[in-house]
View 1 (spheres, rainbow over the protein chains, first blue to last red):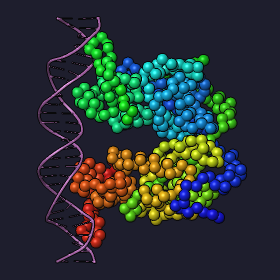
View 2 (cartoon, each protein chain N blue to C red; view 1 turned 30 degrees about the vertical axis):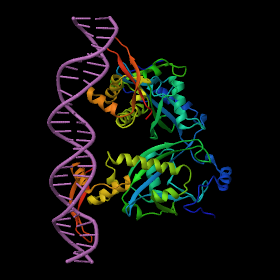
View 3 (cartoon, rainbow over the protein chains, first blue to last red; view 1 turned 60 degrees about the vertical axis):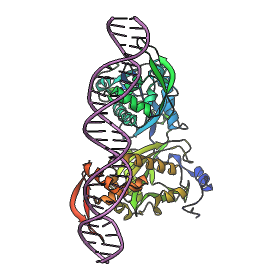
View 4 (cartoon, helix red, strand yellow; view 1 turned 120 degrees about the vertical axis):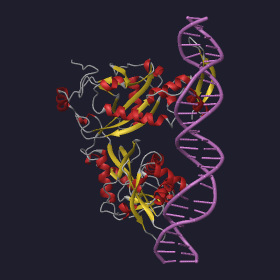
Length: 240
Length: 240
DNA sequence: TCAAAAGTGTTGGAATTACACCCATGA
DNA sequence: TCATGGGTGTAATTCCAACACTTTTGA
C-alpha cells in the first residue's frame, strides 16, 4: 500500500478516490436533514428588529419562526442562507455570516434536523420595502428586546436569535458591522444610534465622534443630510 | 385554522405536529452526510501542536486528516465530537467548543458531506500519554506552524485547522482558555508560555504577572514546583 | 426667534508599555 | 560558587470617561 509521506506535495484526488467512489455505499449511514435558519436584523425607528415568519404548516403551525429551510444537495451553506433570505424576505446582497450550528437530536419533532444558523444585517430601507414575499405571506419584524421577550417561537429559534444578539454585541466593538445596518451614507448621529440600539445603552456623543473619526474607517462623503434643522455631514464606510 | 397570537403562551408540540409526523415523508429531501472534525490542540516542548491522523482508507488514503467522523442519527453534535476525541485520541473530559461548519458541496469527493468542526484544548499530559488508540493506528502531533506549513492534508482540513488557530488567538485575550492547555496547577512562567506560543510573540514578564494576578482568575495553590533551580509557586485557575 | 439636532475640547484617572536587577535553589 | 529560572517596581505614555455649551438651520 502506497502511503503518502507526511510532508508530501499538494496531491490531487488520487485513483484510490475514484475507485472508492464507485464502491461507496451512500446509504450506509442514516443521514440527518440539514437546514439553514437566518436571523435578519435591522434597525427601524430607533429599535433593533428581527424578521420572523409565521409557520403555515406543522410542526409548530401558526407560531413564529426564523426564515430558513432545507439545504440543497448541491448548494453551499452560504448559498442556501442567501437563497432563503431572498425567497422569504425578498432581500439580496446584504451582509451574511455563519453564526452557529444547532444539532440537538430532538430540536425538531419530525426527524433529526441539524440547522446551520446565519445572521444577516441590513439597512432598514433594504428590507422594509420588500417584505412580504410569495413564500412568506405572514412575515413581520419584531422589536428587540420587547416583543421578543413576549413571543413564543417555534423550535429553538428563540435561542438562535439570542445567540445572534450575543454575537453582534460582541463583534460590534472590534469588527465593522455597524455600517451594515446603515445605508451607504449616514450621519454620525445615525451611526451612534446603531451602537446604542445594539448595545442597549447610551454613549457619549463627543467621545463617540472622536473615536470613530480617528478610527480611519469612515470618510466624509462631501454631502449633507437636510432635515428640519441643522444639516448633518454625511459619511461613508471605507470598506475596512 | 387556529393561528396563534404573536404573543401567545409557551405552547407545547401541538396535535398538528403529531399528525404531521405520521404523514411526514422523510425521504422527500435528499440529505447530506454530516460529520464532525476535531482540532485537538496542545502545547508540548514549548510549541503548539495539533493532532492529525493518517487516513487508512480512501478518499485521500495515506494523507493526514483531523480526527472525525459521522454524526450518529440520535447523537448531538457535541457528543459526536466528544466520542471521536475518545475513539481517535483516547482523550476524555477536555475543553471542547464548536468552531464553524464547513459545507462546500465538493469538499468531499464521495458525496455531499457537511462537517461541523470543533476545537479541543488539553494539557500535554492528557494527550501524549494515550495516543494512539485502536481506531487511529497512525496518529501524531504536528507542530504549528512549522510542520503544518509543509504538510499536505486531506479535504479542507488545513483550512479548518487555520480557522481554529485564528479562533483561539482571538479568544485568548478575553476568554479563560489558556488554562485549558495547562495541568490543574501551573507556574506563572508556564502560563506565560502558553500565551507566547499561541500568540507567536514574546511578552514582558513583569507586565504579564501583574495583569494575570490582578485579573482574579487564578489563586495561589499553596505549593511550589521544584526543578533544578529556584522553586516556582503553583497557581490554579479559579473556574471563572 | 425659537426649537431641534449638529458640532466641538479639556481634564483626571486608568490602563498599558517599556525597562533591569536581585533572589533562591540544586548541582 | 555558579548557573538557572523565579521574582519584583517605577516612570512615561496612551487610552478612556466624564462633562456643557455654541452653531446652524427650518419652521
